[in-house]
Image (cartoon, rainbow, N blue to C red; front, side, top):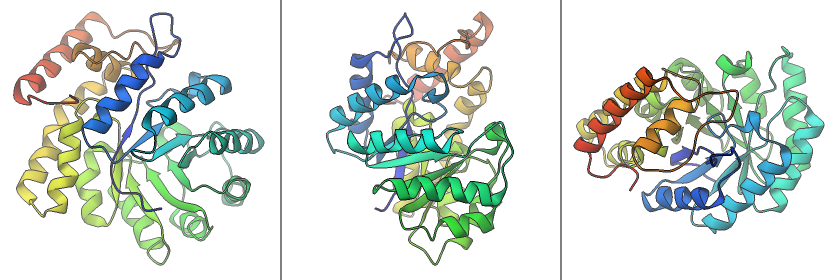
Length: 299
C-alpha cells in the first residue's frame, strides 16, 4: 500500500449535545473527497480520539468507512496506552473495513525503546492490514528515535510514519533510515508539507485541509508538476490560518473556523470550551479573508 498526497486529519463532527453527528460526518466526507484529497485520517488528535469511548470510535469509523465506500483509503486511529486495548480496537477496526491503522505512541509514561518496539510489533502481528506509526512528541512526551524507526520499518505490515514533531530534521532522519524498506514518511506538520516532499516524504496528513482543502491539495499537485513558485505560494498561504489555530485548544479553533465558513461540524468536546469572543472575532476575520481570496475552500 503506497500512501501519498494530501490526507485530511478529519475532525469528528458533534451535535449541540456533543453526540457524534452522523449526517454532518457524511457531508464532510463527501466535501473532502470531492475536493480531491488522497485519503481520510480519522480518530487522530484533531479527531478528538482522546475524549471518545471505544463504542463511539467504532460507530463513527463505520459511518465514515461506509460513506467513503472505497473512494479513498480510510486510516483509522486505534492508539492508546494499553497494548491489549489497542490490539482489541485494531482487530475491530479491521473487521469493519479500515484500510489501515494509525497507532500513536503511548503517552503519560516514558517507555524504553524495547517497550515501544514490543508495543508496535504486538499490534502489527494482531492484524493483517497496514499500520502507520504516529509520532507526536509534544503531546505524548515520546519522540521515536531514528534507530527505532529503522527497526519498525522492517516489520512486514508497519508501512509508514506520520511525523508531527514539527522538525524537518526528524522527518529527514526517518526518510534516510527507512530508505531500504517499502516505507512511507508523511508530514504531520502542515507548515512542512513542501519541505517534507522535497526531502522524500510521500505526502502529508494535514488538519488544515478540513477547511483549506483545495489549497493543501494544490501544494502537492504543484509539487508533482514541478511548479515550484505555485507550490511555495500555496504553502505560504496557509500560515495565517495556522497562526489562529494556536489561539485555542486543538481542535476548538479549527472547528469554529469551519463553522464560520459554513461547514457544520459542531464544537469540540468538553473539557474544551468555545473560543472567547476576541478569539472568535480573530478567527472570523481570517476565515473571511480566505473566503474572499479563494472562491473555493472545501466546497
